[in-house]
Length: 129
Image (cartoon, rainbow, N blue to C red; front, side, top):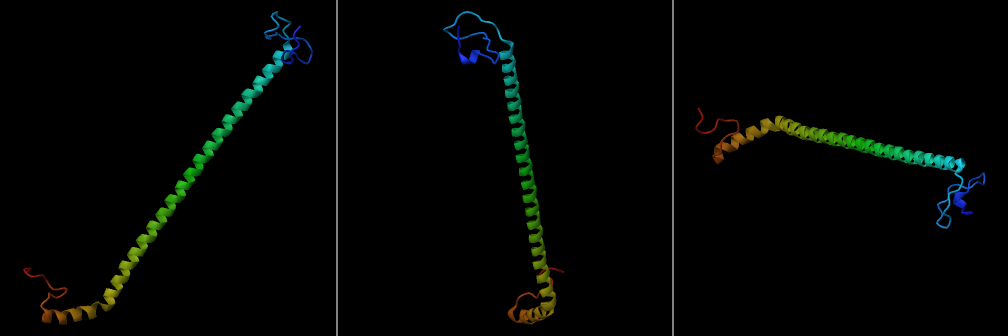
């Protein structure tokens, strides 16, 4: 009789022996098959749990990437608004300087224009009616 430990169950009855040294079929123990079915069910449950955990990690990673992309988009939009505001502020400052000093510049340009022969600012171009 084969006493290989994998062929014994807790009730000490022999299961079907697949040992190459033992060629005859022994009593098929239902306990052994019940145990192997329970182990198989546990193995399947563990594999399913690992798959669910992997799916959760992948979903969390995708959500984190989406949040990161949204944060980057908001930051880029904020910088674009800031740059536009700076540009418009710079143009506004130039316009303010022009309006404050514009009269003096125009007067000085008019005084210098006839002497140097350059066209006056604000006057029509040559050949215009």
